[in-house]
Length: 172
Image (cartoon, rainbow, N blue to C red; front, side):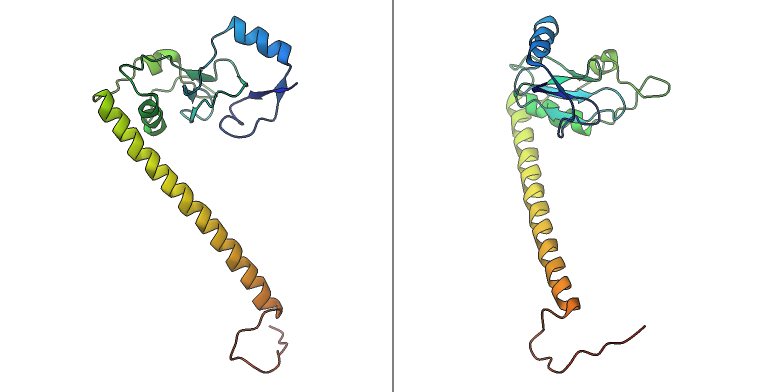
């Protein structure tokens, strides 16, 4: 197939399964489908994994990934994303695999400040996420530089100024 099909294990990452365009169109017309910006929530296995739908054509494993249509005049979707991302889902039902049923989600109390305050809160949290992502990227680059230097130094390909002489081979 051509359309990514996300399951709990690939949700929020890279799809490892695909469905045909024909099947995608059939399902999208028969069942509810998220809009760009909707908050998607995993409801089985890894409970509460939260992703913002980017609008690209894709399909999701039925009932294991859910989303709510919200009145955007009352609830900012970015605020809802951060709320769900941090909510400690304790009211899980199920035996072998924990499940988060729609009734649990719908009965979850959410303290809603004004829409303007929700937007401000989401903006601050988004800025934190961007800062953390930038720091993580910088840290990975610095680790790569360190690893390259380590390899060069221990192999003898790179020398440190001020240290002349020959290398001695020693057996430990």
